[in-house]
Image 1 (cartoon, rainbow over the protein chains, first blue to last red):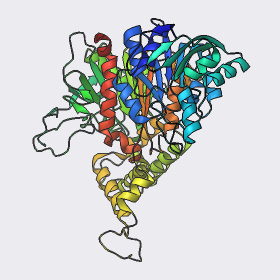
Image 2 (cartoon, one colour):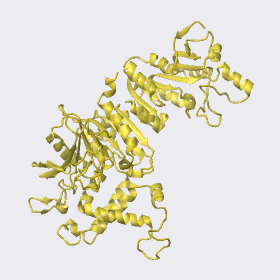
Image 3 (spheres, one colour):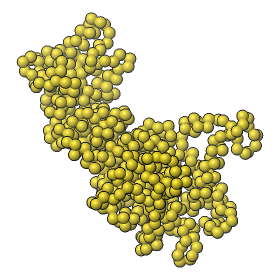
Image 4 (tube, rainbow over the protein chains, first blue to last red):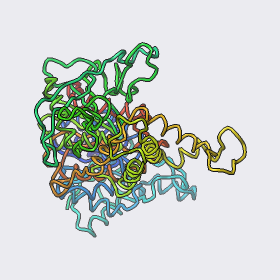
Length: 207
Length: 381
């Protein structure tokens, strides 16, 4: 594990990682943008233009208060509305696992965006596996704090699942960054090890 | 006048005369036109800090403040207009005018036709939203405004939209609240019932009633009652009135007012006739029915190709007269054209009237949108 990607620290590590990935002055669409923290970073640090989509009214208003352009509504409903390649990047940060139709969301993301950035918590992380193995109950952690009955994460997946998904659909993986214990890595030697040691993954994909 | 340090204070309605004829959408040349308007705040040196507020169906030029010390009721959007408010009069030069065809100071069917010396009545030409906007443009030019932001709810939103599409050279930003690019068949139907109530009033006299002792008050009151039902929603009416009887606990067994909701509608109708003209109601509802932002250019997308304004569009969950789906139609067309648009559907139990009532949420959103429009966020980089 000597191949550190960078010395990231702090709560919003994946915000920083994604901000690093996005090129200056890019046109971005942040779907499921929450309170707009990431989009605001992209506006400020990368001089990006673009829009956020957020279903929750209070989050949408908080985003608007940051000076962002926000459309309140369902991300899949609004994605369908955009033209092919309209954005340089379509970003789905920590939201894939809570979408109703993740396959359709990704299809739309790589249609609307020249590139798509997807991040999600890895259910194949060894601690998650051990939790289920030894506790016999649905795993909980800092990233996955919910009970099985109230979790918004209805489509949990592993890094391996995502590889297979992309392969099946001929989706190109342009870049991948793996997070473990608030540090970012390029990989963990093998795909099996990567799936075991990654807490959270960030992928850059395209058609 | 209530003690309120956030009020614009005592204001006065002013008047502006357009001497030349204006070509109306119907092809008719019409003039002269008087425009009643009020302004709040100061126009800056570059003359680009103006906000034009567009009123709804029965509004007027008196958007904010009080007309005298004794005045109990402030302007119709007083919650939103004033120092530190959504439309901040410390920063902006806010303008509101009565629309063409209205009855609160701007030329309308109750005005005297200079050629006959009598009120126009039904000889007043049929007007459209586009015509009212043309008249507003004359006022804006008269005031020396170079760039402006337009904002309105309901029919005011239609005018804001018309401004952004047809007067695109002046409009920097456009705020459309609880509105639509075109009324639904249901909306037209309610307006038609209102017009029928007026037209079938025995005292309507083909619109020539101004010097008569009896006026078409009943027809206008019924039109208002129908309208008022559409401004509320089932839930709001249930909470406000339930099935309660008015001042009693059992029914009359006759056809006088039994229920509280009946009494409320009766009151709304009765007070409305004191401040509104039946002919104006006919003309203005017709203008609302005719409005179709897509019609002239074949589609909303084509219409929006003409504008570079930034848009803020808001709807309310319980509004069934101008439902969210209609706002979404606008947002969809704008995003398809790659225009800068923000959209919020505000949770509210107040029905269509929410745009006049839910001022706290609207204030948050509008203030942020306007700050962005002024580039305040860019400056903070």
